Each structure stands twice: as structure tokens, then as C-alpha cells.
Image (tube, rainbow, N blue to C red; front, side):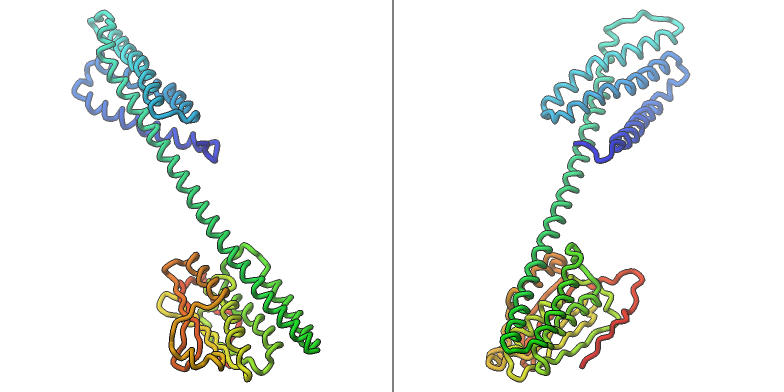
Length: 369
């Protein structure tokens, strides 16, 4: 695994190398305190610790080469164990040679003593190798975990983008169909006005395609632009009521959260009422959640059926909003569709209340009409 930064391996290796060997040397020094006045013993222990520290560098080069080549665990174990043996013996030999030079008696140098003491150096190098590969494996798993998180975020972003793009052709088809109806009825002025408002709304919704969250004030503005288009079509048959908590207009919400809900209310409610009706858009605070309510009068021919109070899931727009809420907030959000005590159809949302730092009341003002 190649580090992202060329200096990252250096920065990781040296602190661990110095800290690990510093701890090992410190333990040896503490254990050697009873013999600190014996120069031969001090020379033996000092030479051994210095040589074993130096030996860790060729072991590092060997281990790094095995790691880069992605050698199997058995191969790594066999190669490092074999390589540690002669290095451990050299460390013991240097220790005995230093002890002999500092000894007043000057005993002869014996390889049998070196071979007998070499397991100590061999064991230290094998332990260092184990720590090396353990740390490399941990860093590798950590990097894979970061990659999985990045892939998950990318997939979620792609799904959210796909869900948003699903709304735009659905909304555009409905609006163009309404414009064609106005043209067939020779209402050219209304059709022209609707086309102008549609162009303005599309500019608002198509800007920043990767932006998935916006302030509630922006979402209300887009919804108001959409309703302005529908007011051209329905005239006095459409009545819009706003009940907006002004302290929440800076709350962060999913982009295109309200427009598909309002569109659903217009298409399945107002459009099917000869005398029209009202749509209520209400926001309020419910503990740590933002509560959103869209209410509309039901189609007259289905009023008696809607009074049964059965929860309904709705069409493309409602299901799209439901899926986006689930992707962005999971169990922290909810969406319900039902009829209320007045027999009106309503969609209620709950999502986490997220206010930016240093938020202030937006100059936009929405009041019930």
C-alpha cells in the first residue's frame, strides 16, 4: 500500500522506531542497574542494544520489500526468521567483543558463547518484525476502511443525485402538459407567462447539481415559484396558505423537499376540484426536529373514500421524498401521509433540526393567507 504523501511513511516509521527502541532500551537499563559499576557488563549491554538497534534498519528494508511485493504470510515469516538469526548472532558477537575489551581479565573470545547468547538478539528482531507487520496491517485496514466510507458516500451521493434528477422530468412533463392545455384553449398570454416562470424555476433547480442541502428559506422560495406557475393555470381556484416559523427559515433541509409534495397536492387535489381549494404549507419546531406539514383539500369525488383515514403512500414525488429522507437521515426522519379530522389530505415530515452557526432570521416572510 503506497501512502498518499511521500513523507507519510517517514513520519510514521521514525516516531514508532524511536519510541519502541527507546522503551526497550529503557527496560534493559533498569534491569541492569544492579551491575552498573561493572564496566564489562555495561559494555556488553550497551554494545548489544546499539547493535540490535542498528540491525533493525536492514530488517526494515527487508520487511518493506516483502510488504511492497505482497508476499504471503508464510513467506514473510520464513524469510524474516532466517534473516534475524545471523543478525542476532552478530549483535551477540559485538556485545562479547565490547565486554572483552572493557574487562580487566580479558577472557578469550569464544563463538560458543556468542551462539548461546544469540537467541536474545534473534528474539528482539523477530519481535520488531512482528510489530512492523502488525502496524502495517493496521494502517492497511484503516486505509481500506476510509476507502469503503468514501465509496459509501459516493454511492449515496449518486443515489441522491439520481433521485433528484428523477423529479425534474416528472415535474417538467406535468408543467409542459399544462402549458399545452393553455395553448389549446387559446390562452396564449397565460401560456407565455407560464413558460417564463418555468424557465426561471428551472434555472433555480438546475443550478449546482451536486448540492443536496439548502436553507429552508431557499426551498420555500423555489416552492413559491412553482406555485406561481400553478396560479397562472388555476387562477382563483388555487389558494395558498403559509404558516412558517420565522426562527427556522435558516434550517438546513434536502433540496427539492417541498416542491414535489406541493405538486402532488395540486395534481391530485386542486386539479380535481371544480371550484378549486387551498394548500397549506406549515413548518414548526418539534423538540430537536423540524416538522413540515402539507395539507390540501381532497378531490370531491374521493372525499368520502378519504375519510376512512387509511394511510396512503402517494406517487413518484412522495416516494422520491421518502427515499431521499431515508438516505440522508435514516431513522432520524419520518414521513406520513393520511387524512386529518377535517377530511383533508396531509403529508407530515420530521427531520433533524440543523441550524448553521450564527444563524439569523431570514428577511423572507411568509404569512397565512
